[in-house]
Length: 518
Image (cartoon, rainbow, N blue to C red; front, side, top):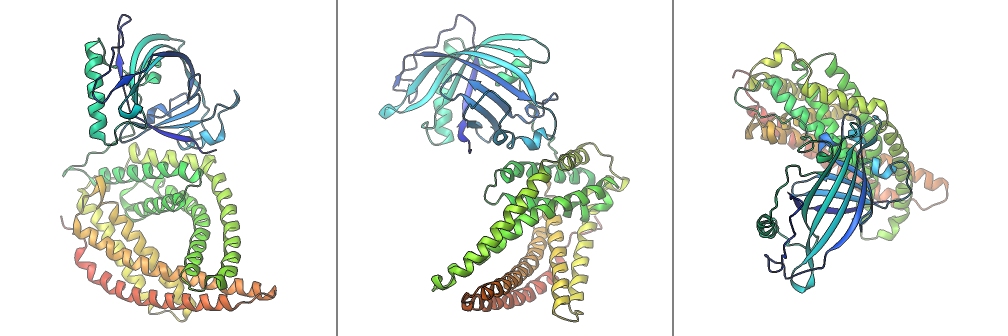
């Protein structure tokens, strides 16, 4: 079951036992306040023994009482926190649908209660114009037990949370919260020393920080830059994990692309990374990439066939073609997705994530990685560029069409590797190379895109041919298959022409190679 989602935007305040929630009528946008109502909330918070979720500022709990009782996951966000909510269900194990969204952090470590929190909550609702509820003020008396230590902590806090009908812009939301805060401070409140009930229950001011952040300077070494790039890509991989588990649109493509980017970084800058750790990671990333590709490739063919049919004026004539292709590719996809999920719940996958994080933060890098970043990393880019050029030259030596296809496929992969290796160091926090490197990456992308279009077209042609033979054997009219096959032949011819242009642009891009003499 898909969870309900809510962006939680709130502020918390410490108050003493004598404080009284003030009448907030007329404060900011508040026109009217409700009568207070009181309920009791009982929550059990779950995590690993080493607080794997809390270290990422993630909360997993089961709460009874109140209008939103059920299973909750809270995730950090740009503004506020994203809260996911599932129905309460029976008092049993954590539902798989809930675990799937945090499995990438839990991995295969045991999960158990880490805190039990009882809250007596008195809520006052704040209404704006047209009797729309825009915020709630919660007066909470909290009793929290730390499961590991047995420590019991009791405190009182006020919490102001905006509703979904609060003002639409961040500036207006802040103004509303500021106006309310001003009145609460007058009543004796002060900003909370701990903004999380779980953190307070565990005796902490806040939950953990979101992993190491690398600050690169002109003095950063090649190793510093690579650690930062691998950290960023690993975070991207981890972010895609729950989306793949939920089979969200585009998730497999995103995760596959991230795996390819990681593999490119490891391959292009291999001399600056520790062996055999980096070689082992390359191999494990390849296994994951193959599993993702087995699920992604049927999606590509399905979408390409669907779009081809939709581009035709006589769609009815081609519906039988599409139906046969869709059934076949959807079956392939679901089989591959099942195998992918098996891999993603295996110890092998979790150890891969552990190893990526270890290399990025704690592994000892070779002496070569201590060199100046730009000069050392330029060597990998120049080497990759030469590799693409050699493979392009080899295409001209192909003896037949089959060999030509194989050799252009190798050109495409080499261009993709160069592109991703350059983009890892010319975008975002790790942009040590400038616009010239960006142009080089775009030239490589042009080669990759043209040959990718050619390959996809050829694969669809093969699929249409095989499908037409099956259809003919079953007595179906196969004219539509031939018609679509001819269109795809023209598209593959166009892709070859585009490759010729992209190849020339790539050759000219040599002037954008970073210098190795810095």
